[in-house]
Image 1 (tube, helix red, strand yellow):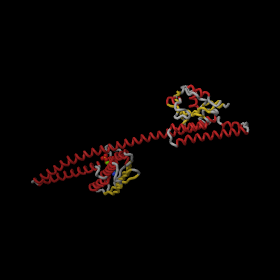
Image 2: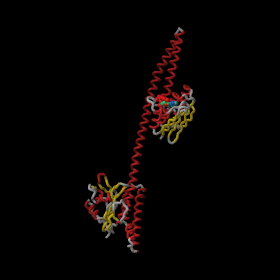
Image 3: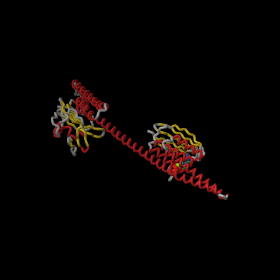
Image 4: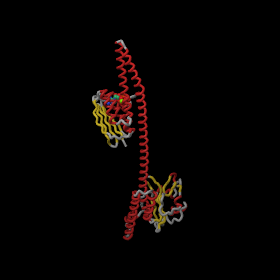
Length: 438
Ligand SMILES: Nc1ncnc2c1ncn2[C@@H]1O[C@H](COP(=O)(O)OP(=O)(O)OP(=O)(O)O)[C@@H](O)[C@H]1O
Ligand SMILES: [Mg+2]
């Protein structure tokens, strides 16, 4: 009769054939035939362990679903340890053991499928000792305590049984049990079972990690969609406000101004006095200036709304031309963007360019501005640089009431891109940003 107590060392299998052979060999007690038999057992156990390892990983690579995976694995393990049935028991929340589907060798109506075994709080039951401490007494081809345990839990007709802890890294996630060996179970069988449980635990960890990754990816995708919606809404909201402002400016203020000019024209014609005429001419010139500045504003505002017929390149060139006429800054242009870009991307690109150009006009005292656009890395990259006074970026980025630079950064980042502002006093300034188009 073989008696072996397996310790809770997470599966080294001290009482295996290997240990026994070593012990006897060092004690000089091994006869040649015994030595040959011990070597054979060792080889068999090692071969079985390597098959179990191979099965745990190769069935997973075949990408079968979990029940099929456990059914196949159970069958392979049963063959290796000479069992008629094999079941993985999974530790569910609140300390309940339930069988992992599909257990091998149990019929579709077996009571094993509905068993929910509550573990004892004192941790001293056989199930707790196996799951958490990996303690198993194999004697006479079985573990008597385990046999009684199964029958107490309604799993009848078990001839003999062994079970080992099922670890996943540092965690104990359940037990692996084998039932009904014709020849009776040995400590070598327990060792093979332990190797199989460890390999399956690793695979389980891998699966869990993969699932977590899938959930994270899904959440990330949802966040990206939400961000895109937000962006589209912000862009659309901004465009709508601009359109309303532009039409009010055009249909109301500019009409009134034109009416005032006409009135003034009539007064000038009717006026006799030379001094009055001079004053009226002056007033007409002032009104003309106001009108010009309002029209410029109108061009900028309505161009920013980017009505569909206006192409992005055309809008950029118009803006540069207006800058050249009004501020004398010579543009140097290299525009290479595809015709078809999503509206929100066009809107961001154009808004950032206008902000950068307005800054050059307002602050830089530049004589030249260089602007380049290109499609790159699944997005659009834009560079606007000037040869003006330059500035200390860190000092100018967070100035109350001055939002242009920050807005450029935020717009690019909100769209999933980036924006860099590089400048130094006396060395001009460069704004560079990239936004994804996909
Ligand atoms: N190209 C540039 N050349 C020199 N100084 C610049 C340039 N761009 C920005 N600056 C400096 O950075 C400051 C912040 O720019 P930002 O665009 O944030 O605000 P702003 O242009 O002053 O106001 P707004 O909110 O209307 O854009 C500017 O006031 C200016 O001092
Ligand atoms: Mg600005």
